[in-house]
Length: 386
Image (tube, helix red, strand yellow):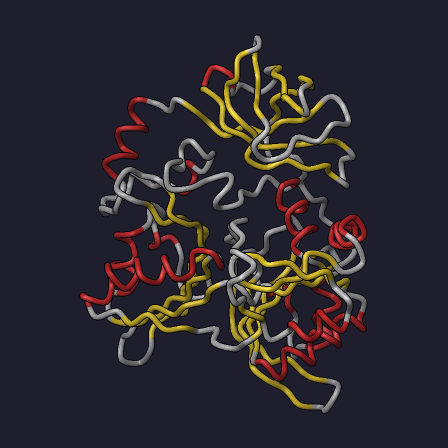
């Protein structure tokens, strides 16, 4: 799933609140300012929430993220001019992860595009999920490039609730509130389904997709405010552990998923960020940044994002220098203690000569150089359960 920038706003600025904010307060969650929103960073504790997602099922409020509908004639072809991923590879009911680029091939944001199909009048509909901190800039970018061609950009979320349900037992627990088997929804598949409410025996239609940002199986659900609050409470009673941004960050890092604003930004390209699989230069369509990426594909990159495993229990945080032979070669972009692996892990950009798996470097932590090895990403890959 697209992921949130870690940029925090000044505390004096008025912050947005999701429709689940009161639920979080009542649960005594620790609230922080995040990308212009008041969001829970933890409920019962980061490690407990992390393990709940890895071993059982967790529930996240992701209502701070942007959700827009693009609608019009030739919507997909026009959006194709803004992304390097071949959108013709997905059809109705399917989705893809991709990035918005500038002319230099730098990443403006990462996002997920859902193909909702055509209306009876041949109007094409796409749903786009974008990061909270980039919502305004992304919408302005889309409007600037698409509205002149007749494409409408509509806020699909409004005051609705957007939740992520993640973990190996998510499907069987969520199916108690649906009229159908969720096994029919493939990875990156999506549809509209009926959600039943046991509190008042009502039902509502919600958008569901099989995506996520934790490395586990799970779903993301966009549902109206009233039904969403009831569902949130019911799922917690069903055994879902409420999770905050803290565990979301450790989970995504273990899974090798990048955080926009830290692990990639407008001066890093998909090739440098290890996202070359998103770039389909074999397609004939032109897109913003294509010329820059073609040059980089031919000439090669000078730096690359790597995964690091520390050999001590010291934790490398964002901004810590990466060192070789007493010379700084880069800095950590994301780092944490992995609750699953019980090791310190991190990401960072280094010159290409240091990017080979198995290379030994050092991380400067509070004045001491700690040994680390470059390893293949992801750090963690989930095991399927029967």
